[in-house]
Length: 373
Image (cartoon, rainbow, N blue to C red; front, side, top):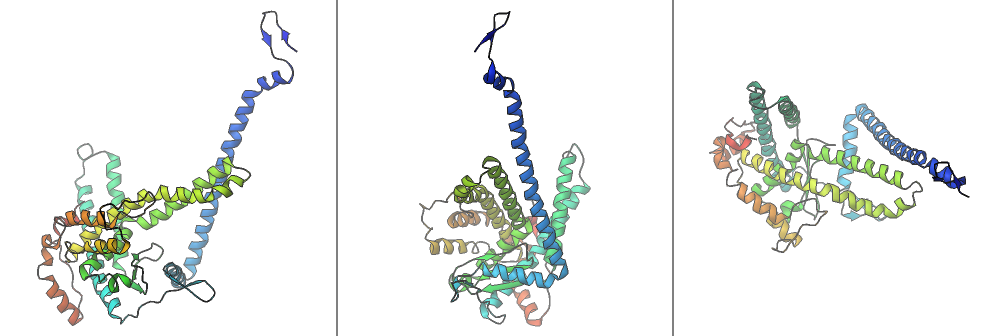
């Protein structure tokens, strides 16, 4: 039924009129409820993460050595390629320290680690000089100075890490791979097939080890973990807010995993390219042939069947194509090579003599343009 006013306008009456009257209030309450659900879920997610992190720190503080052993075993299980009688992954075997392959990895690794120390020292020296001569207005504003200070702090932390004792774990595996983890710093995991199947030379092995150390120097592994954690919380918040029943989440789970890989793959490829260039610099500082080192990516491309010109990187690929990496590093090696490093002239003879006598040799500060930003 419609009721009319003296002005001649018609107003809705009954339930319809009540609905119109409170529509704005209803929308406001719905929006507030939705936002509250988002905030509540995000707070819960970060709370669970923070609690887990604090428990992890407490467990690590109780017995750091035991915790590091546990983390190392977990990382080794990630290298598993065989299963036991029960169908569970079988922990791969490590090569003995006296094994020729392990000795080669250790010899090359020691030189690479020393070169990484040289790089860190040069980065620190460069930023100290920039801060000393920095003038507001001429060289930038206060935010630029803070950026340099943050970089200085970052490389000072890397210097401490590089000064420790490094361990090389050579895993018996037919799958060529090498990796590092911020969970177990100063440890480099190398699959034996890099040396035994790909027949990597010392120059190529130096390229691989320099690349892996570069991931730690740039903080890539820690950043990847942070990105994954942030992505998981964002998805948790969105799915819980949009789907209170959880039914849609159940069916959308495979797609969310794909979405996460898609979100992180581009950032991961950028990290790989950055580690390639820094690894090339480290190999040059260690007096290895940077023209020959990148050839390892050609071998990887051939083994994977992606050495043709028609090879295309997928959207979710975490690494650039091996042939693209080879081409890029070959171009960079014209500038980044041991010929431009003063201490590399006659270095091999001095290094072998030092190894024979059991002495430690140090790099000179003649590192040229290789350590420039």
